[in-house]
Image (cartoon, one colour):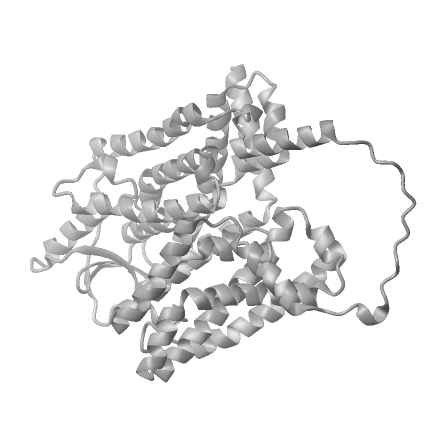
Length: 516
């Protein structure tokens, strides 16, 4: 009983702490957007090309469950990740390591906190689903409406919560690289459940195949010719053909396998304790050890310095001048600091590939090149907070006028260089539309990064938003295309938004100067 109390109180304290954080508001906003998109028909389940279900409790609940599994399973990871890392950074972990709390219990408490946070989001979506059902004037069947969320979405959240814990205790997955790895791994997770000839429950974490097979069977019962694949898209249907959907048949085997997936998520958090160092200082990197050893030697063998009366010559006011080029160069060095030779080789290879390929391939390579610099751009505006140097930086003369533009220009330089192959190709082709769209994208990307970094003081939000945005651009959604990939790209609008984001960044930073 004492063990359960320890887990409960640790998870409860961690959960309450997170509900007071800015990311919790982001989660609520994301959930409200998901519910709104599903309620207004922007999220569509269909059998290709245009067969879709009638709006009833079963269809709304199934649609909501798939929407939650896909979007909250994808981005819920980023929103709950950070609890263990915070214990590392604040030193709380070292204090907890001195207690009798074991590694499995600690990670189980963290998993429970993650799971509870995602569970609250599902409860909010249950309320949205009920309202959606009532607004559509369809008979309310609570079991048909809520069972997909409980049986499909909840186990998926358990797995998402456990993977967030696992990534946090593996040092090289703890930062931005882990965020990108999860993004790719999540997409790869969908493929096995779709491609396998028979339904394999353990591969269908999201419930995509389970839902798709049931929807396809319901469509074929009314339209025998509907042999197309099940799709889940953000679009609208011009001439939909409706069929009744009575819901998923919850056979005992189906429910048991979903419970197994839930316990699989919980056990993953416990098993991951194998990789957990329990905040041991002996697991620091060799470079840090060498640095500390060198510093100790220097201190131990340094000669005592006699007190010398030093008089500093005042700097004449005429010599105090602003050197933007120097600040820009140093900001660019900070932006690129720590990159290995292979990173530069890959970036150069992408630039060359942009130039030598066809126009359509060039656009795709341009997006990939601008994705390559995600982890560098995500530092904009938050580097000072992360390294706790904001008091020094903010105390310099006019940091909003001097430092902030240098940060933006350093990011713009990097963005322009990594996309230079495409720009040269557009110029040689005389494609003015592509040149202007390229310029708009090169201005918008650092503006977005700087705004989100200054606003949140962290790199996480930009990494989430930016990677998703680029993915949706690759799916050729015109309204989100700021690089000119589609014919209807509203790049002019995003150019205006970019300047608005710059202005907003300056205003937020000016406010921070008075409060931090």
